[in-house]
Length: 24
Image (cartoon, rainbow, N blue to C red; front, side, top):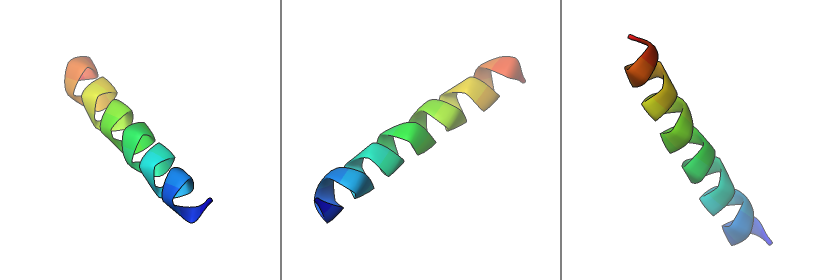
């Protein structure tokens, strides 16, 4: 359970970074 949450958080963080990079 914890591992899945961490992976999901990492994926979300990566997607957020990508979005911020594109917007900039």
